[in-house]
Image (cartoon, rainbow, N blue to C red; front, side, top):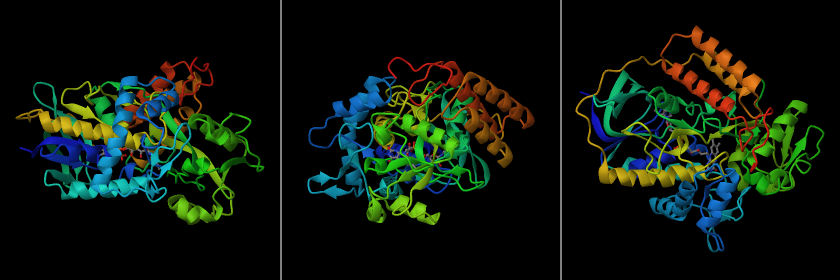
Length: 491
Ligand SMILES: Cc1cc2nc3c(=O)[nH]c(=O)nc-3n(C[C@H](O)[C@H](O)[C@H](O)COP(=O)(O)OP(=O)(O)OC[C@H]3O[C@@H](n4cnc5c(N)ncnc54)[C@H](O)[C@@H]3O)c2cc1C
């Protein structure tokens, strides 16, 4: 019989490690695709964590900004829980050893687009995710109740005879493994690799969301996908993860230029470069078709670049671009999935025994568009709360599970590229019914050519469910823009 744990967490990003640490003294196993705590989006996060810690700010004001960014498609109760938990979440990280940047009066708080107050806690300028993950990793490695299971890909939920989720089948170094648990927590992050260009690392491929969908878990908001306006433009033939040029650069005064060196945002929105992300991203997409878009921080940041934005500076220099002197070519790229596995206020999915937290979950906090710096916060705050609840009342470990029903096989490289290309062409920043239907047809043809029921097959299912959700929402709202449908009244 396979080894059993009180709690099995799929994913070692901010969400997974927050659950694991807070669930002490329960026995927790944490599964991850690559190196523990280093392989998800969390380690790449730049800007920071939103929390109402400054003079004159409050959780209610933070909530108001979150609801406005989400076009009021958020769940106000979930937003209130998130924003109220934010200050204590930052202090928890501080106590765990995360070293945040400080000023004369406490945390140095940055300001980002659509935040009415300076409330972004950051570390080493633009290396917040790396610092937070360093602290979480160290704490988890030192915790006797946490078992680390690296380099494993979960591909199927295991069920007990009564139907509840009671473990996971994963492909590991020695082939297929079964890990049993009283509670399974999905903390598998985003879906970046479903698109040709993304800011996410390669393991954010939607496989966790896909396995939950394949098991019949309810999903929500699959059509709401956020594209970041300023990823470093790809070199010829490059695809997948592109370096991100943080929004904080525009917050610091960097401007967007067209191929002739003229600013184009002031004519499109009163907040110009600090307009909502979806507005800026579509404008950059349109300029891309006209010859290219460029982010110019030469005046606003100039010589201070290496010190203020070391991560971005290093990425640009590695491409032979000096952002102190040159405007940097940019493209939009998939950045964050607001939708995911539907969860209730206790992070329970529709499948008994399965919980979800972090980017893979649709908890209702983001609505149609995520407010910048709310996603690390969500994974940390809701992950910690879930861990504490499970510490009190983790379900019993089922004595046995039913046999598995399928094989594991990833999409091969050609099929993977075909999937990412068709989603980029038809289901990225500008969508319309005809294109979405064409994408569904291309997807069906791809599915017909591939052997059935492999792990990759579930990622095709995920794409299909996303396309169907995009077709079904016949309005433009937040990050979901339909060129053949009007903007919703409140959008
Ligand atoms: C470049 C970049 C910058 C960002 N900047 C910010 C920011 O400044 N502020 C902010 O709030 N947000 C930011 N975000 C978003 C934020 O980083 C993510 O939403 C958040 O880190 C997600 O955390 P997570 O724990 O849910 O998932 P992740 O950190 O992505 O971790 C997912 C984990 O799941 C594992 N996994 C996935 N599939 C499987 C599987 N099938 N089997 C086993 N394990 C699996 C992975 O290996 C990984 O360990 C940024 C994102 C990127 C990419």
